Amino acid sequence: MVGSSRPGRTRRSLAGAVALIGCMGAAHAGDMLLNLDLEQPAFSQAELTRADIEAQLRALRPGATLDLSGKSLNGLDLSGLDLTGANLRAARLNKTRLSATKLDDATLDQAWLLGADLAGASLRSAHIFGAQMQRARCAGADFSHARVVSDLSGADLRGAKFAHADLSADMKNQSMGLMRAVLRMAVLEGAHLEGANLAHADLRFVHAAGADFSGAQLQDAEAAGADLRGAKWDGVAAQGLDLDSARIDAGAAAFLKGAINLDRAQVQ
Image (cartoon, rainbow, N blue to C red; front, side, top):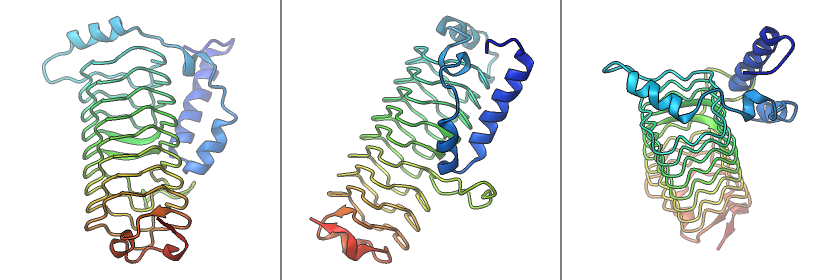
């Protein structure tokens, strides 16, 4: 709950900010974060405890799923819980521990996961649209078959699984900027992206040495300055992929037909 002499107005303003950032393009959303007070209770405190959530899980009727939409759950230790199918739309989970948590089929649209710990979490087939996940720790997390159009700038995604995940841009919603997966400066070393759709994704300056992009769609993605040494490229679709100043292996060019600025890549 947000402390204010005008709680109704504050809640409306907060909800408006969350919705606006969630539907904005990544660059504009990043600018707005600079002007948002992340120290206010809604983004730094929790209105429930782990025990509260466990009690709600026990009380669920067979076949029902947990609804935590819009809740402030910042900093909680929710590691290891089974939150399959949970509705976490617009929930605030900044610095929350979700390591080894099961979030398969969960909805995390417009959620806040700044600095959250998702190491080893399972998010298979989850829907994560417009979420703020900068600097999240997701090493070994499983995003297979998930829809991920969120800001993962600076996130730790070492060994994460994105097999057949859809990180492509939402080409139908561009009124406020291109909605796409942003992994700028993320660590993707050894990540599994086999068959993933990364069309138009922002991969600038990612550290993806040894990542597996076999069969991935990378059309019109931006990978300028990325470290892609030792990556696997079998069957990749690379038309329009920008490799300006990217570091690649000598044999990679044969798999990256149609990429642009390939002559400016640093072949090592």
